[in-house]
Image (cartoon, rainbow, N blue to C red):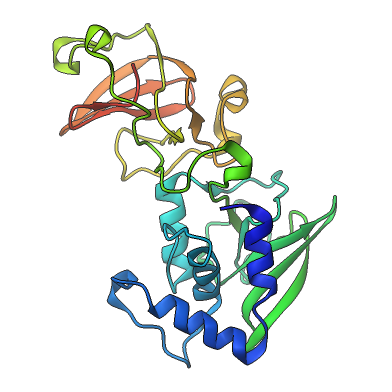
Length: 271
């Protein structure tokens, strides 16, 4: 999946024909997200974004709900909530029309579109269900209405294949270098280890996947040097352990930027 191809796809969706294409593509999924079939009368901005990505071979964000799409993005570590972030084409933008501009926006997202062009001060977004059709919107960078961004894993950014999920192990640890299990004391406070995953490893606010990700701007300065704009740490990043905790079949490490899952059901992401 490439950025310019996603932009080309949404630009080619126009008028009533575009709306019908969104319905057709979204409802062709098996199974449908949350088993819900999109109806003609339904709001269809999130379904438009979903259909565009489906047509480009990416289904991880597929949803008819802005709220549920945002949740999926957070779980994948590709949600960016940073006032300083300037998007790239192909990024997904979430809006909150009710925000008053005071403090951090923690509201529910109302609408969504895909960024199709960017300058230093302006973002052009193409959206489904804009005035009941497909249309473009000009948005000021860091506008008060922006709830956040979704930054999908594009091949032209990282060379990562789109079917490789965040936190998936990059390769099995060879027998001669296979570490002990955490119960045997493999991880030690004060030691430094290496992240080994295909894509990136989420940094969370606590030692569980129920906690949200910390976000790019809340990483340490050194952490930001080794992270994507989503705040997830890149493969081969070196991390130093401050604290260790077990959570069921998971081992969590506290590093200077937050908590990372080092091991899950015997699969190690940090070695």
